[in-house]
Image (tube, rainbow, N blue to C red; front, side):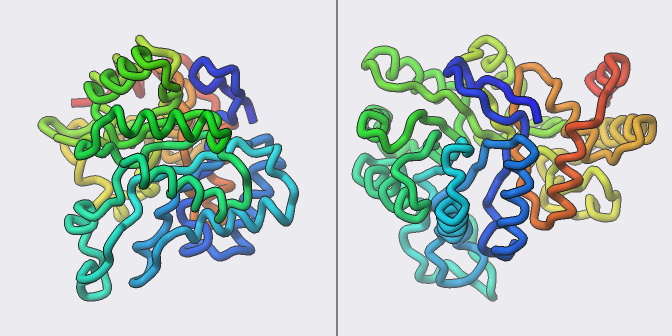
Length: 334
């Protein structure tokens, strides 16, 4: 597996990142461990989790299952020095009373109960994450969900303290609007605080539909911003939208399509399918291959549930798109 530089840090991370969100819940421990071992054996090193993964799997869970599994794996294998480890804080749920309805979490209510990015919260959250991960530091620590109720100065000073204490080497941000990102960078420059080196946002081959208002999905303005600021790497989560590119039946009514559905999406789905037939790959693999050669440079973050899904995603690294095929994919759309 090839590597790419993370921002301008000098750190080389694998061109594909492995998301551990499902590990320890939907994906059992033996399967998770096999996936992690295969990823490292193939040359991967960038592993991503969060403190809140995955409280919504079962009522009453506080989260932390993914970090705990990774901690057991790292301790048992002794491979911590082979891993560029990322985790996140600010999206743990503070109060679960009344959160579940008919066996499902109430997401609009949950979003009002995120722990936030206050100084005391982040200081405790990183310590709790390190305990679960059984390590003395993470390589990258994200603010998981931008917290506009807390002054940025408070959050950034706390993150600077976490870096100064050696508990995180770099910081990142996720689910954030471009204007906020620019304000964050200005404050870091003015105060000598470490600036984000990674931006984790939802990004895929389909383009968000017109009029969509989302702080989490990359839009044209954010892509333009990232092209102008190569000290900030895009880590693209949900790059294949739960695998919907491979199946029209799966796409029909799937919530992952809600932000994309329309004539433009249909044209791009057709283009991905056509190129997939030409190169002998699946549309999901073509989308990953397209992202791997896209501008600005980005790191697709895949979160497979099964070994088969992992192997299918890994095989996308061998899909070679010609310049003509890439140009057709770029140009497709209504």
